[in-house]
Image 1: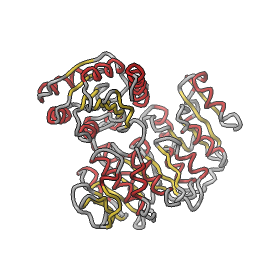
Image 2: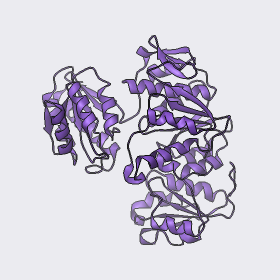
Image 3: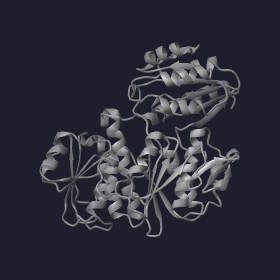
Image 4: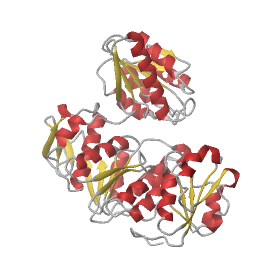
Length: 461
């Protein structure tokens, strides 16, 4: 298999794992089949649950295996492409590796077939916001950027339709990065590193190593963008060959991006007044700086950046304004699945916050979150498996008002009953959603539905 774009994959025996609703497995299977590969795609779910995806491959001769027979013949594959959610240590993958198969992620395939450069963004938090904002900054000045990857459309699917003079802007996860060999983004951004996904990576060191792979194949002509304010991200600059460019909300960065005299600046040049940025919170000012730095590195003019930043409202489930009910603002931050993300959300509001938090814990403790809540005078409404653990930390920190609810719609009602006009009811769980919901998106939608019901009941917006 050639490590170059436009590889035909002619005759290569490929086994793709995963045919779920996100469409990544189907996109990989179709892209490789169209380039001459002999493709098998498998999923342990029964065929009945995958009918839509199977039907969309009906015009190909891709072999589809489901249920108990999903991994049949994987030992014969030369190339195995697991979907991002598939751990790399499952027995079928170990067997394939023992028989000599290459195991790579979907972003590797996208890189091989893409006709244009890739700008890749990773980090524990903020990558979706930066990816979406960067796409808008580029498209607003005619750079023809396609946006996807770990969000929205699979990167492979975008690579299929990209133009040679365009750009691919991709959110990439640690799961995808740990299975690359030649993936090389022209511009790579590392936003931050907090404890996350340790059930998959087993240690913080392994998680950092996976994230650092975004820079592994970069060369001197490429650009690596780092958050100067995050120690874990900043220390990675010592291990790269590409050009390191910092951004910071706290100190001057003449060669990168910073904030001075109330302005976002890039290479010392004022770009946008802080007051014009629509996104809430200091962390989002950092996200804006990261996107501006990446756009500049890609050769984009920043002449319209202030207009873009004043218009960009963020993405769903990330400090998303849901509605105003009798003077109480409801905000959906369901994407906040770790305590640092919730701390950042709390610090985004000067108003009194009633925080709805809880779920399945991904970390050992909540003391920093509890201390922030106490310092800011926030009230808590707790749900899910971690409710008691969070409550104990909050009590120890001196949080005065702690309530509990059996379900999220009930938590919305409890929070609203405590709120006064001018208050903020913030869903920012600091936990994963899997104890009560399919995923964080379902949790966010249920929150919004509960707020809508309140709105209809109260008859005011």
